Amino acid sequence: MKKVLLFAELLGIVVGLVCCSESESPCETGLIEAYVIGFDQCLAGLETNTGKGFLLATAAGDTVMTYNLPDSILSFPTELFVNWWQSPFFPDSALSEYRIAVKYRPALQHERVSAACPGYVIFSPVTARAEQVVLECLERAE
Image (cartoon, rainbow, N blue to C red; front, side, top):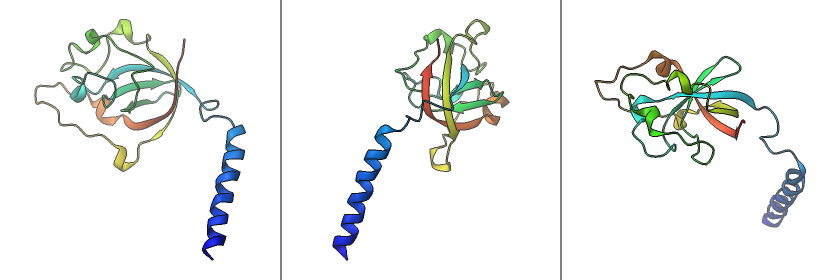
């Protein structure tokens, strides 16, 4: 019985490798245009994008928050975060500067981020209402 299970498992792996190696990558279809328009004020002091929340405005009309925007795709000047306690949005001059193409899904409960925020932050309801998402595919749009 163990030999049959082992054979079935190995067969599944081989079939998976053969089938999946020729299929499209997940980023080849289903990308939508989005702009990085702001950030989670409570995590604005982090040095890298990893773990820092970013607000995305999508072409579908959604405003979502993601915490897995990689440093390798976009970097942001520190000036965008100078007044982090007053507003979660980038200045008007930068709202259309950070264009990306994304594919995302709703964050699962264990993937959600909840950060304590200092009391002096003028908290925006936009960041509280924004659905948390996990980016599955991401490309910089030129």
